[in-house]
Image: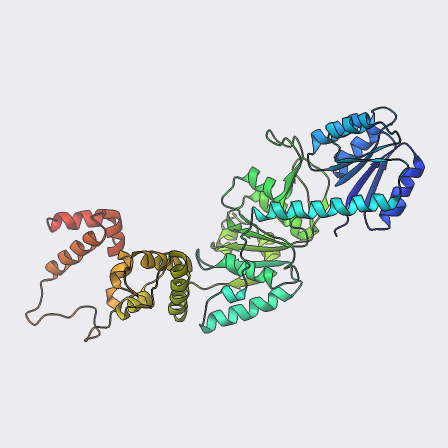
Length: 456
């Protein structure tokens, strides 16, 4: 188990020495004080995991020390030590916030059992905190559905990177390409896989809250900081922290993050004490960080620190071989979820899917399949179950001539063709001008002009 920080407050020098000798030999970090006042100062400096407090102390009595510690931190385990048999004293100590009590004289076998139990509780508590922030599913490289040569190479390289001791990885790619899946797969294929994986979207929180989440805060660091809070870097020690949308963090947070990468330490908000952390940082963004460096919104030194290894994930329209495979995968997935029995895709629909540009990448494809499986009443996904923006991609259809449009023998008036296309776009968009203009690739003002022109 991970070594604990232990504070011993006792006026007997022999007791303090015994704790340092016995528990220090087990790898624990010991802090000792002979009075309540000194003990409280040490507590506020180091925030130990466990505090042993003697009942009778010079100055502040042990029971009052317990109350003050509990006001500062609700999570610290406090062990009350007393040489008296009085049950009333022990009960009062428990009411004041002691986790348990032990009578003097005691053996250090008893103390070690107590420490081991506390270490296990802390481990369980941290895991519960992490479960609130991470998905329960174990994602591996097998979850990255692909057959294209470009993705095979990226997965091969990513597996190698996962096995190294490199602590920083930068994932670049458009929104929806699966950067979060890669981050989880890298963690679960690494030597840190038994440790914590913590993820945070850097663009979803204002600066102060983001810093508090990442670095933690001391009690009273700001208005709502009523107690000490450990940050994600501290909670995920020995594991992985995934910083999504890293390109959106402020300059102030960038400086603090640079300090973590350079020194491998963090400092809680409101504190001056550095805490060592051992985490692998995986950062991701859909922004062009080199452009951000040029316009001074992203620090160049931070970029190169994050770029221990850089993985560029291509958009879906650059790996069209994967589209059919992804569709088959998600059809099976949503068949099970919605208790459907979709078996195939109509050839015309499949051709449209291959030709569509997929601006939302894999995330958009997943949503399209979900919609189609829900709407389809038969066993084959038809063109009618696809969104209107995909239906409009008919230039890729396999017609006899190979051209987008087959002219009739008598020819056609260009104005009439424009009118028909506009009418079709409006029909497919349920008369929504914004959607129709998007389908046509023109502005809404241009669409309005053409509607007026054709008296639509």
